Length: 137
Image (cartoon, rainbow, N blue to C red; front, top):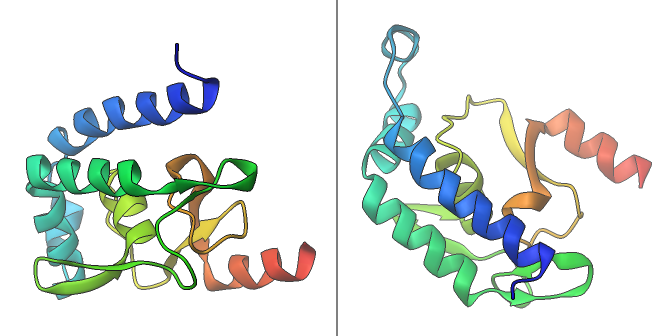
């Protein structure tokens, strides 16, 4: 029997595949396209490889206090995807939710643990939101 924590991550993973396969480059994407946005679109378009990579990252992570899934010890884990280095939490949040970030968007950790890659602990916002989170906690 799975714990509620395992059930929530499992449900997110199941719905991730639907999100990835449902990704469409609309007219607005084509108008506002940049090299970074194109890179994210390619990662999302490669749904099978991206889903396996995200599942592997989550499976290898260590459960810690507060339900965090830590991908590394020390600093945030960086990985190479399609020739570009990104943080594991960025890949999981943006690609796992089939979202393409703008240059102002950042992935925020609700848990305030930058090593955490638990998709339930990640959200997006701006750098100002991050600064305010740090100040308010």
